[in-house]
Image 1 (cartoon, rainbow, N blue to C red):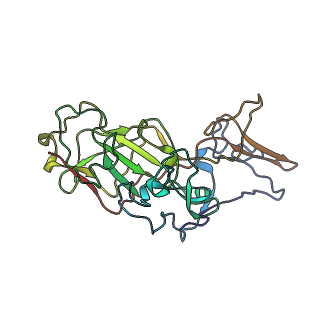
Image 2: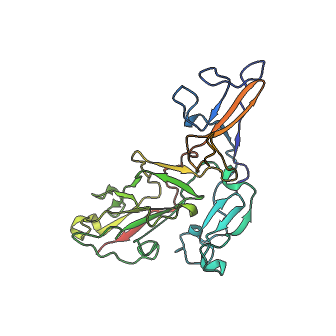
Image 3: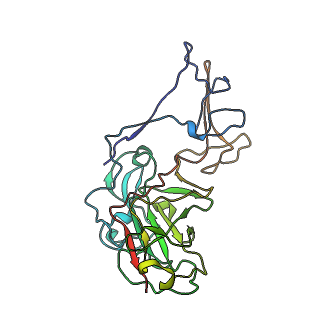
Length: 294
């Protein structure tokens, strides 16, 4: 399991040990945007230790339905370690607002495991996450389906932020070799971003009858990728510091308008607020996820 997979790199540029950005104003903007030419959101400098894994603990059950004991779908990373989603049956407590159970203690785990990745996926509807995969129930198609009749749940290994309308393409045919005619949009109403669960649903009015589905099979390939569609799927930034701007307003997580500025005789170090590192959009499933349509 991971231990400090990523580490920050300090940049110094001259004999005075001052840190400069592209405008030579004696400051470096980390993970921020600046219209004057300061380093933008892609300029955060990190080292990555490729020898470290960010996989969930191996003792967890794979491709479980989420209600089984210690299913990977119910486990995410926070800065205490690998935690079980509150309210999961394995915790013995149905209170979803309870303190998460820490399964494996790893200090600052969430901040040290690189970008969010998605190693698990289930297919269901808006009321059940696993009905069609892995549970194996047959989906009954309709000439004009309701929103969320088919909903894919993507499980990241840590909490995420989502903006806009990312999408996921549903596949069809026995080997999932072609695109189904209608793409799925993100469905935040049944997502659980704080636990790393992102849902995508077929829109209302989709024809899901067997006459419109090749080989009566729908699903997602193990290495398919989500598309941002001008949106974002990002790592949740740190939540241990409360920031205030010059007017005294508290900065919300993800705000691009305020930040921390450290100043000394050599210049500035400015860390702007904003979203975290972009998630890996390519799925890393152990196998394809398929469902049968009747």
